Length: 406
Image 1 (tube, rainbow, N blue to C red):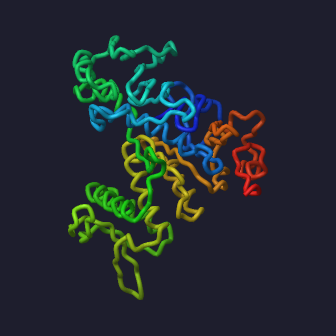
Image 2 (image 1 turned 180 degrees about the vertical axis):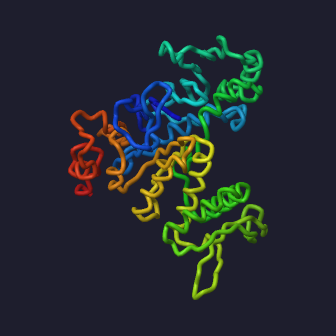
Image 3 (image 1 turned 90 degrees about the vertical axis):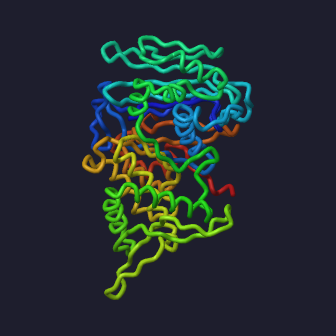
Protein backbone atom coordinates (compact mmCIF):
# COMPACT_ATOMS: atom_id res chain seq x y z
CA UNK A 1 0.00 0.00 0.00
CA UNK A 2 1.13 3.52 -0.70
CA UNK A 3 1.43 5.60 2.44
CA UNK A 4 2.75 8.87 1.09
CA UNK A 5 4.07 10.48 -2.06
CA UNK A 6 5.38 13.94 -2.79
CA UNK A 7 7.11 15.93 -5.47
CA UNK A 8 8.47 19.42 -6.08
CA UNK A 9 9.22 21.48 -9.20
CA UNK A 10 6.93 19.17 -11.16
CA UNK A 11 4.52 20.37 -13.88
CA UNK A 12 2.35 23.10 -12.33
CA UNK A 13 3.70 22.50 -8.77
CA UNK A 14 6.61 24.79 -7.95
CA UNK A 15 6.77 24.00 -4.23
CA UNK A 16 6.58 20.53 -2.71
CA UNK A 17 3.17 18.88 -2.91
CA UNK A 18 2.62 15.99 -0.51
CA UNK A 19 -0.27 13.54 -0.37
CA UNK A 20 -0.53 11.26 2.64
CA UNK A 21 -2.81 8.22 2.66
CA UNK A 22 -2.20 7.76 6.39
CA UNK A 23 -4.81 8.36 9.11
CA UNK A 24 -4.51 8.11 12.86
CA UNK A 25 -5.07 4.73 14.47
CA UNK A 26 -7.67 6.39 16.70
CA UNK A 27 -9.82 7.60 13.81
CA UNK A 28 -13.14 5.75 13.63
CA UNK A 29 -13.00 4.40 10.09
CA UNK A 30 -14.69 1.78 7.92
CA UNK A 31 -13.43 -0.70 5.36
CA UNK A 32 -12.13 2.19 3.23
CA UNK A 33 -9.04 2.18 5.47
CA UNK A 34 -6.62 -0.64 6.26
CA UNK A 35 -4.34 -1.16 9.27
CA UNK A 36 -0.71 -0.25 8.67
CA UNK A 37 2.58 -1.71 9.82
CA UNK A 38 3.36 1.67 11.39
CA UNK A 39 0.44 1.37 13.80
CA UNK A 40 -1.85 3.80 12.02
CA UNK A 41 -4.25 3.31 9.11
CA UNK A 42 -3.94 3.77 5.35
CA UNK A 43 -6.74 5.08 3.11
CA UNK A 44 -7.84 2.78 0.30
CA UNK A 45 -9.67 5.65 -1.44
CA UNK A 46 -8.33 9.10 -2.24
CA UNK A 47 -10.37 11.58 -4.29
CA UNK A 48 -8.89 14.73 -5.84
CA UNK A 49 -11.20 17.70 -6.45
CA UNK A 50 -10.79 21.18 -7.86
CA UNK A 51 -11.49 23.48 -10.79
CA UNK A 52 -10.46 22.72 -14.36
CA UNK A 53 -6.74 23.34 -15.02
CA UNK A 54 -6.02 23.59 -11.28
CA UNK A 55 -3.45 20.78 -11.30
CA UNK A 56 -5.50 17.68 -10.42
CA UNK A 57 -4.17 15.61 -13.32
CA UNK A 58 -0.61 16.77 -12.64
CA UNK A 59 -0.98 15.43 -9.12
CA UNK A 60 -1.76 11.99 -10.57
CA UNK A 61 1.02 12.33 -13.12
CA UNK A 62 3.55 12.63 -10.29
CA UNK A 63 2.76 9.16 -8.97
CA UNK A 64 2.44 7.62 -12.45
CA UNK A 65 5.78 9.05 -13.58
CA UNK A 66 7.53 7.96 -10.40
CA UNK A 67 6.30 4.40 -10.89
CA UNK A 68 7.50 4.44 -14.50
CA UNK A 69 10.93 5.82 -13.65
CA UNK A 70 11.47 3.57 -10.66
CA UNK A 71 10.54 0.33 -12.40
CA UNK A 72 10.77 0.73 -16.17
CA UNK A 73 13.17 3.55 -17.09
CA UNK A 74 16.07 1.24 -17.99
CA UNK A 75 14.00 -1.02 -20.23
CA UNK A 76 11.78 1.59 -21.90
CA UNK A 77 14.17 4.49 -22.46
CA UNK A 78 16.91 4.39 -25.06
CA UNK A 79 20.50 5.24 -24.24
CA UNK A 80 20.20 8.73 -25.74
CA UNK A 81 16.68 9.50 -24.50
CA UNK A 82 16.00 12.31 -22.07
CA UNK A 83 14.22 11.54 -18.83
CA UNK A 84 10.55 12.33 -19.63
CA UNK A 85 9.98 14.49 -16.56
CA UNK A 86 8.47 17.97 -16.72
CA UNK A 87 9.64 20.57 -14.23
CA UNK A 88 7.74 23.70 -13.28
CA UNK A 89 7.92 25.87 -16.41
CA UNK A 90 9.35 28.96 -14.71
CA UNK A 91 12.37 26.98 -13.52
CA UNK A 92 13.15 25.36 -16.87
CA UNK A 93 15.62 22.47 -16.75
CA UNK A 94 18.03 24.02 -14.28
CA UNK A 95 16.41 22.87 -11.04
CA UNK A 96 15.95 19.14 -10.34
CA UNK A 97 12.51 17.62 -9.97
CA UNK A 98 12.29 15.93 -6.58
CA UNK A 99 10.07 12.90 -5.92
CA UNK A 100 9.49 10.68 -2.91
CA UNK A 101 7.34 7.59 -2.35
CA UNK A 102 6.69 5.63 0.85
CA UNK A 103 4.92 2.28 0.62
CA UNK A 104 4.51 -0.95 2.53
CA UNK A 105 4.14 -4.61 1.66
CA UNK A 106 5.56 -8.04 2.49
CA UNK A 107 5.75 -6.99 6.12
CA UNK A 108 8.09 -4.05 5.45
CA UNK A 109 7.92 -0.29 4.85
CA UNK A 110 10.07 1.24 2.12
CA UNK A 111 10.93 4.73 0.89
CA UNK A 112 12.28 5.70 -2.52
CA UNK A 113 13.40 9.24 -3.29
CA UNK A 114 15.18 10.85 -6.20
CA UNK A 115 16.18 14.13 -7.81
CA UNK A 116 16.11 14.29 -11.59
CA UNK A 117 17.02 16.54 -14.45
CA UNK A 118 15.89 15.65 -17.95
CA UNK A 119 19.53 14.91 -18.76
CA UNK A 120 20.45 12.72 -15.79
CA UNK A 121 19.72 11.39 -12.32
CA UNK A 122 21.08 13.76 -9.68
CA UNK A 123 20.55 11.41 -6.74
CA UNK A 124 18.59 8.34 -5.66
CA UNK A 125 18.03 6.57 -2.37
CA UNK A 126 16.13 3.43 -1.40
CA UNK A 127 15.48 2.95 2.32
CA UNK A 128 13.73 0.51 4.64
CA UNK A 129 12.00 1.33 7.92
CA UNK A 130 13.26 -0.29 11.09
CA UNK A 131 9.90 -0.95 12.75
CA UNK A 132 11.31 -1.02 16.29
CA UNK A 133 13.20 2.28 16.13
CA UNK A 134 11.00 4.14 13.64
CA UNK A 135 14.02 5.19 11.57
CA UNK A 136 14.72 4.52 7.89
CA UNK A 137 18.06 2.96 6.97
CA UNK A 138 19.54 3.34 3.51
CA UNK A 139 19.69 0.13 1.45
CA UNK A 140 20.89 1.46 -1.89
CA UNK A 141 22.00 4.94 -2.99
CA UNK A 142 23.39 6.74 -6.01
CA UNK A 143 25.04 10.17 -6.12
CA UNK A 144 25.45 12.76 -8.85
CA UNK A 145 28.68 11.08 -10.03
CA UNK A 146 26.80 7.85 -10.60
CA UNK A 147 28.47 6.02 -7.71
CA UNK A 148 26.29 3.21 -6.28
CA UNK A 149 26.53 2.31 -2.60
CA UNK A 150 24.77 -0.51 -0.77
CA UNK A 151 24.58 -1.25 2.93
CA UNK A 152 23.54 -4.64 4.31
CA UNK A 153 21.54 -5.22 1.14
CA UNK A 154 21.90 -8.37 -0.93
CA UNK A 155 22.37 -6.93 -4.42
CA UNK A 156 25.09 -7.16 -7.05
CA UNK A 157 26.25 -3.55 -6.77
CA UNK A 158 28.95 -4.04 -9.40
CA UNK A 159 26.42 -5.36 -11.93
CA UNK A 160 24.10 -2.40 -11.30
CA UNK A 161 27.03 0.00 -11.70
CA UNK A 162 27.98 -1.59 -15.03
CA UNK A 163 24.42 -1.32 -16.32
CA UNK A 164 24.20 2.33 -15.35
CA UNK A 165 27.65 3.36 -16.59
CA UNK A 166 26.23 4.85 -19.80
CA UNK A 167 22.65 5.23 -18.61
CA UNK A 168 22.25 8.43 -16.57
CA UNK A 169 18.58 8.41 -17.60
CA UNK A 170 17.64 5.17 -15.79
CA UNK A 171 16.97 4.32 -12.16
CA UNK A 172 19.20 2.03 -10.12
CA UNK A 173 16.06 0.12 -9.11
CA UNK A 174 15.13 -0.63 -12.74
CA UNK A 175 18.73 -1.71 -13.40
CA UNK A 176 18.64 -3.87 -10.28
CA UNK A 177 15.55 -5.66 -11.55
CA UNK A 178 17.50 -6.59 -14.69
CA UNK A 179 20.25 -8.18 -12.59
CA UNK A 180 17.71 -10.63 -11.19
CA UNK A 181 18.09 -9.37 -7.63
CA UNK A 182 15.63 -11.22 -5.40
CA UNK A 183 15.65 -8.40 -2.86
CA UNK A 184 14.76 -5.73 -5.40
CA UNK A 185 12.12 -8.00 -6.92
CA UNK A 186 10.65 -8.44 -3.44
CA UNK A 187 10.40 -4.67 -2.99
CA UNK A 188 8.87 -4.39 -6.45
CA UNK A 189 6.15 -6.86 -5.41
CA UNK A 190 5.57 -4.85 -2.22
CA UNK A 191 4.70 -1.80 -4.31
CA UNK A 192 2.15 -3.84 -6.23
CA UNK A 193 0.38 -3.27 -9.54
CA UNK A 194 -0.17 0.29 -10.74
CA UNK A 195 -2.90 0.72 -13.36
CA UNK A 196 -3.76 4.10 -14.84
CA UNK A 197 -5.39 6.03 -17.67
CA UNK A 198 -2.84 8.85 -17.29
CA UNK A 199 0.32 9.44 -19.28
CA UNK A 200 2.72 12.36 -19.72
CA UNK A 201 0.14 14.38 -21.67
CA UNK A 202 -2.65 13.77 -19.16
CA UNK A 203 -5.70 11.56 -19.43
CA UNK A 204 -5.18 9.20 -22.34
CA UNK A 205 -7.07 10.57 -25.33
CA UNK A 206 -10.30 8.80 -26.20
CA UNK A 207 -10.20 9.46 -29.94
CA UNK A 208 -11.71 6.66 -32.00
CA UNK A 209 -8.42 4.96 -32.89
CA UNK A 210 -7.15 4.98 -29.29
CA UNK A 211 -10.51 3.81 -28.01
CA UNK A 212 -10.53 0.83 -30.38
CA UNK A 213 -6.97 -0.03 -29.39
CA UNK A 214 -7.96 0.20 -25.73
CA UNK A 215 -10.92 -2.13 -26.29
CA UNK A 216 -8.69 -4.63 -28.09
CA UNK A 217 -6.11 -4.50 -25.28
CA UNK A 218 -8.83 -4.95 -22.65
CA UNK A 219 -10.31 -7.90 -24.58
CA UNK A 220 -6.87 -9.54 -24.70
CA UNK A 221 -6.50 -9.01 -20.95
CA UNK A 222 -9.85 -10.63 -20.11
CA UNK A 223 -9.20 -13.36 -22.67
CA UNK A 224 -6.02 -14.30 -20.81
CA UNK A 225 -7.74 -13.96 -17.41
CA UNK A 226 -10.99 -15.88 -17.89
CA UNK A 227 -11.53 -16.13 -14.12
CA UNK A 228 -12.29 -12.38 -14.11
CA UNK A 229 -14.84 -12.41 -16.92
CA UNK A 230 -17.71 -13.63 -14.74
CA UNK A 231 -17.13 -10.75 -12.33
CA UNK A 232 -16.91 -8.31 -15.23
CA UNK A 233 -20.21 -9.57 -16.67
CA UNK A 234 -21.81 -9.25 -13.24
CA UNK A 235 -20.68 -5.60 -12.96
CA UNK A 236 -21.90 -4.74 -16.45
CA UNK A 237 -25.26 -6.37 -15.78
CA UNK A 238 -25.62 -4.65 -12.40
CA UNK A 239 -25.04 -1.23 -13.95
CA UNK A 240 -28.50 -1.45 -15.57
CA UNK A 241 -27.21 -1.03 -19.08
CA UNK A 242 -29.50 -3.60 -20.66
CA UNK A 243 -26.62 -6.03 -21.06
CA UNK A 244 -27.41 -9.68 -20.40
CA UNK A 245 -24.06 -11.19 -21.32
CA UNK A 246 -20.46 -10.53 -22.24
CA UNK A 247 -18.12 -12.48 -24.49
CA UNK A 248 -14.92 -12.11 -26.49
CA UNK A 249 -14.88 -13.06 -30.16
CA UNK A 250 -12.72 -12.62 -33.25
CA UNK A 251 -13.39 -9.45 -35.22
CA UNK A 252 -11.88 -8.26 -38.49
CA UNK A 253 -10.72 -4.63 -38.30
CA UNK A 254 -8.76 -2.36 -40.60
CA UNK A 255 -5.23 -1.53 -39.43
CA UNK A 256 -4.49 1.95 -40.81
CA UNK A 257 -0.79 1.70 -39.92
CA UNK A 258 -0.33 -1.48 -41.93
CA UNK A 259 -3.00 -0.55 -44.48
CA UNK A 260 -4.66 -3.94 -44.29
CA UNK A 261 -7.33 -5.87 -42.44
CA UNK A 262 -6.45 -8.04 -39.48
CA UNK A 263 -8.29 -10.30 -37.06
CA UNK A 264 -8.29 -9.31 -33.39
CA UNK A 265 -9.96 -10.47 -30.20
CA UNK A 266 -12.73 -8.02 -29.38
CA UNK A 267 -15.35 -7.56 -26.64
CA UNK A 268 -18.98 -8.22 -27.54
CA UNK A 269 -22.13 -7.72 -25.47
CA UNK A 270 -25.38 -9.63 -25.55
CA UNK A 271 -28.79 -8.01 -25.13
CA UNK A 272 -32.06 -9.81 -24.50
CA UNK A 273 -34.60 -8.53 -27.06
CA UNK A 274 -38.13 -9.96 -27.50
CA UNK A 275 -37.12 -13.26 -25.95
CA UNK A 276 -33.99 -13.66 -28.10
CA UNK A 277 -30.32 -12.72 -27.80
CA UNK A 278 -28.69 -10.05 -29.91
CA UNK A 279 -24.89 -9.71 -29.98
CA UNK A 280 -22.84 -6.79 -31.24
CA UNK A 281 -19.35 -5.32 -30.67
CA UNK A 282 -18.86 -3.22 -27.57
CA UNK A 283 -17.61 -0.43 -29.85
CA UNK A 284 -21.25 0.16 -30.84
CA UNK A 285 -22.38 0.61 -27.23
CA UNK A 286 -22.73 4.00 -25.54
CA UNK A 287 -19.70 5.99 -24.43
CA UNK A 288 -20.66 5.34 -20.80
CA UNK A 289 -20.73 1.58 -21.27
CA UNK A 290 -17.37 1.55 -23.01
CA UNK A 291 -15.92 3.80 -20.34
CA UNK A 292 -17.18 1.51 -17.56
CA UNK A 293 -15.65 -1.50 -19.31
CA UNK A 294 -12.25 0.22 -19.64
CA UNK A 295 -12.30 1.44 -16.02
CA UNK A 296 -13.03 -2.09 -14.79
CA UNK A 297 -10.11 -3.30 -16.92
CA UNK A 298 -7.89 -1.01 -14.82
CA UNK A 299 -9.48 -2.03 -11.53
CA UNK A 300 -9.37 -5.81 -11.74
CA UNK A 301 -5.56 -6.30 -11.77
CA UNK A 302 -5.08 -4.23 -8.61
CA UNK A 303 -8.09 -5.79 -6.88
CA UNK A 304 -6.70 -9.24 -7.70
CA UNK A 305 -3.00 -8.71 -6.98
CA UNK A 306 -2.84 -5.58 -4.82
CA UNK A 307 -1.59 -2.15 -5.80
CA UNK A 308 -3.23 1.11 -6.84
CA UNK A 309 -5.46 2.30 -9.67
CA UNK A 310 -4.79 5.92 -10.67
CA UNK A 311 -7.77 7.19 -12.65
CA UNK A 312 -8.31 10.68 -14.03
CA UNK A 313 -11.90 11.95 -14.43
CA UNK A 314 -13.46 8.75 -13.20
CA UNK A 315 -16.94 10.11 -13.84
CA UNK A 316 -16.23 10.77 -17.53
CA UNK A 317 -19.17 9.58 -19.70
CA UNK A 318 -20.76 7.77 -16.74
CA UNK A 319 -23.86 8.50 -14.70
CA UNK A 320 -22.99 9.87 -11.22
CA UNK A 321 -24.86 6.98 -9.56
CA UNK A 322 -22.29 4.52 -10.93
CA UNK A 323 -19.37 6.16 -9.09
CA UNK A 324 -20.34 4.93 -5.57
CA UNK A 325 -20.64 1.39 -6.93
CA UNK A 326 -17.11 1.64 -8.31
CA UNK A 327 -15.78 2.94 -4.99
CA UNK A 328 -17.50 0.04 -3.23
CA UNK A 329 -15.27 -2.40 -5.13
CA UNK A 330 -12.37 -1.14 -3.02
CA UNK A 331 -14.21 -1.01 0.32
CA UNK A 332 -15.58 -4.55 0.20
CA UNK A 333 -13.01 -6.85 1.90
CA UNK A 334 -14.24 -9.83 -0.11
CA UNK A 335 -13.78 -8.05 -3.44
CA UNK A 336 -10.55 -6.38 -2.31
CA UNK A 337 -8.70 -8.94 -0.18
CA UNK A 338 -5.25 -7.44 -0.98
CA UNK A 339 -6.40 -3.97 0.18
CA UNK A 340 -5.78 -2.32 -3.17
CA UNK A 341 -6.08 1.47 -3.38
CA UNK A 342 -7.80 3.92 -5.71
CA UNK A 343 -6.56 7.45 -6.40
CA UNK A 344 -8.92 9.39 -8.65
CA UNK A 345 -10.03 12.81 -9.80
CA UNK A 346 -13.71 13.60 -10.10
CA UNK A 347 -15.96 16.53 -10.99
CA UNK A 348 -19.08 15.01 -9.43
CA UNK A 349 -18.59 16.70 -6.07
CA UNK A 350 -21.53 14.83 -4.53
CA UNK A 351 -18.95 12.06 -4.03
CA UNK A 352 -17.36 14.18 -1.30
CA UNK A 353 -19.96 12.87 1.14
CA UNK A 354 -18.91 9.28 0.34
CA UNK A 355 -15.38 9.94 1.58
CA UNK A 356 -13.75 10.69 4.92
CA UNK A 357 -11.94 13.99 5.34
CA UNK A 358 -8.62 12.10 5.22
CA UNK A 359 -9.60 10.84 1.74
CA UNK A 360 -10.22 14.21 0.09
CA UNK A 361 -7.54 16.27 -1.63
CA UNK A 362 -8.36 19.80 -2.81
CA UNK A 363 -6.31 21.39 -5.58
CA UNK A 364 -6.26 25.00 -6.70
CA UNK A 365 -3.98 27.25 -8.74
CA UNK A 366 -2.92 30.72 -7.64
CA UNK A 367 -2.51 33.91 -9.68
CA UNK A 368 1.06 32.87 -10.62
CA UNK A 369 -0.15 29.58 -12.19
CA UNK A 370 1.26 27.59 -9.28
CA UNK A 371 -0.80 24.59 -8.13
CA UNK A 372 -1.29 23.79 -4.46
CA UNK A 373 -2.77 20.62 -2.94
CA UNK A 374 -4.13 20.14 0.56
CA UNK A 375 -5.91 17.30 2.28
CA UNK A 376 -9.27 18.28 3.75
CA UNK A 377 -8.26 16.89 7.13
CA UNK A 378 -5.38 19.40 7.22
CA UNK A 379 -7.76 22.38 7.15
CA UNK A 380 -8.32 23.55 10.75
CA UNK A 381 -11.83 23.20 12.08
CA UNK A 382 -13.20 20.67 9.58
CA UNK A 383 -15.44 18.25 11.48
CA UNK A 384 -15.87 14.65 10.45
CA UNK A 385 -19.66 14.82 10.57
CA UNK A 386 -20.16 17.95 8.45
CA UNK A 387 -21.65 17.92 4.97
CA UNK A 388 -18.53 18.17 2.80
CA UNK A 389 -20.54 18.54 -0.41
CA UNK A 390 -22.56 21.52 0.84
CA UNK A 391 -19.64 23.29 2.45
CA UNK A 392 -17.43 22.78 -0.59
CA UNK A 393 -20.13 24.28 -2.83
CA UNK A 394 -20.46 27.19 -0.41
CA UNK A 395 -16.76 27.91 -0.81
CA UNK A 396 -15.61 27.10 2.72
CA UNK A 397 -12.74 24.88 1.54
CA UNK A 398 -11.65 26.73 -1.61
CA UNK A 399 -10.63 24.84 -4.76
CA UNK A 400 -13.82 25.77 -6.62
CA UNK A 401 -14.25 27.32 -10.10
CA UNK A 402 -15.63 30.82 -10.59
CA UNK A 403 -17.79 30.62 -13.75
CA UNK A 404 -19.29 34.07 -13.17
CA UNK A 405 -16.14 35.63 -14.60
CA UNK A 406 -16.52 33.89 -17.97
